[in-house]
Image 1 (cartoon, helix red, strand yellow):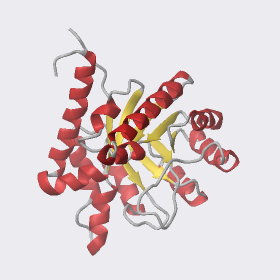
Image 2 (spheres, rainbow, N blue to C red):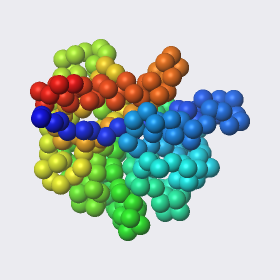
Image 3 (cartoon, rainbow, N blue to C red):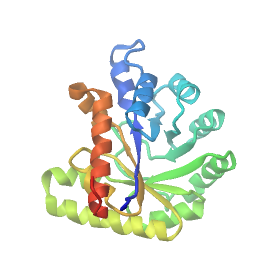
Image 4 (cartoon, rainbow, N blue to C red):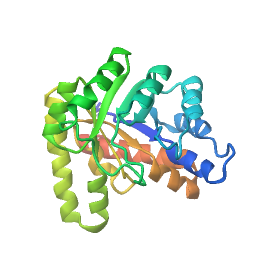
Length: 255
């Protein structure tokens, strides 16, 4: 029997909290969304605790750690405040991302190569606490080398440029996908576990999931947006189906 690899799906629930915060109160509840994601086929939950708390809040992180069985991936800026929160809650993983107060969403990868002195004590403290550390970076071998030097086990490749180009310029999208593929191959060759995320939709997930070295995708905004029309469980299940279909086709196995 032909088998094919399985790529994990991490569901980011930030924008459930965005909707909640638009009116205040406690509805919709991001923890309820996380529990529903688990039932719908998610392999993990991602939540970004921003400095300005524009969506996920401190109480959300506490409840997620207490109430969900799936691994929790805490996205965080490289600050002393966020390090303290991560060490207090001990999530399964911490993904260090660049963060600027004025941006609407994360606009690019972390410059790990240029910020090693700043990042080193934060990465070391997380690793020493038994938290799996990933760095959200551009598909650039120099950033992969920096991740290894810092002691991070995982990198998450920023797929935003590919997903944006897919909508407007398929030639540019193909070039960006090749760049992602080369970076993923290099990262795996130097011992990194390679993840990917940002901007992924039903239309862009299959080319990315076919990159052989990528073992996990983290997807949020699209799934929450699609849930307005079909429901959250349905949007997650369809993403899982498309991922599995692409992997089966790549392996030559029945879907």
